Image 1 (cartoon, protein in one colour):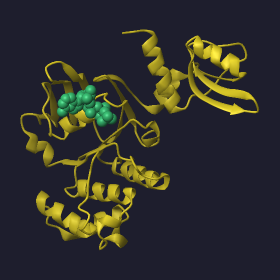
Image 2 (cartoon, protein in one colour; image 1 turned 90 degrees about the horizontal axis):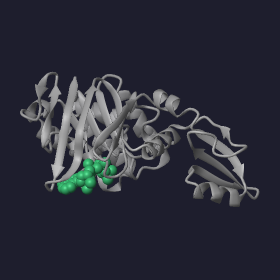
Image 3 (cartoon, helix red, strand yellow; image 1 turned 45 degrees about the vertical axis):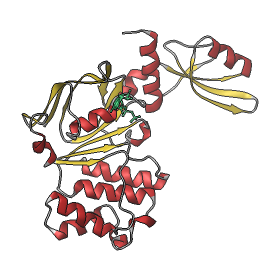
Image 4 (cartoon, rainbow, N blue to C red; image 1 turned 90 degrees about the vertical axis):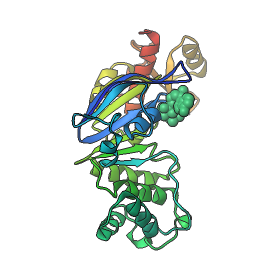
Length: 290
Ligand SMILES: Nc1ncnc2c1ncn2[C@@H]1O[C@H](COP(=O)(O)OP(=O)(O)OP(=O)(O)O)[C@@H](O)[C@H]1O
């Protein structure tokens, strides 16, 4: 459906915000993971046809959307990182306004979307009184107005409380049953239970594309746990052992460590969480420069 081919974006003559990114995507949720500055927003904006690549191609069902952005815009829903609502418009008025802009003429669709994002009862309330989660859900309703085949969501859960996060994630997961949903985040837990695949970006490059299960499998044997005295903990740190977690308990430190081999006598190999798996992968990449 979407074929991303060798995308490069150069800013200011030399900064490579994207450095040869290629990806083949179909329906389902893709989690785009990377630290701040990894190039996620640049890639999302490019897919949303807001910025053009310095080189490379993006094909939507075989046609290049760099050359013909309108092909994408018709089929795209986009929720940017800094999405803002008009505070004095009600949820209903806000959607009516965007429906008019997007040429959506079916008023029943707005009602259905308000129900989908669980805002039907707040339809006539001005957005100024909405919580962060309600605003995000209104943003998703806006992005879904034209029944898009591709939904792009940038840093979706920033500022949401845990319950709102959960609701919002479930909503995106359900949309991903039939559409392509690309969710960019640096918070692994945002996508670990909904993304079919994770694309890991680092310094403008796509360094991995795998299912969460594959990432966990690869990290098996590299995450260790041990109860350490404080001076032992500090000595291990001093030796460059990567600490994933440290929790003081009864005068000892419960430590979780990323290391290719047993980091110290008594450390036992432990099942990694997805976040730990990604950290372990990152440390391993640092240890062996490509
Ligand atoms: N318009 C711009 N002009 C110059 N440099 C830019 C521009 N946009 C992004 N960059 C740079 O490109 C690199 C990638 O930025 P990008 O915003 O795509 O990363 P990101 O992974 O989305 O990070 P974040 O999570 O902070 O949004 C960074 O070094 C950033 O400073």
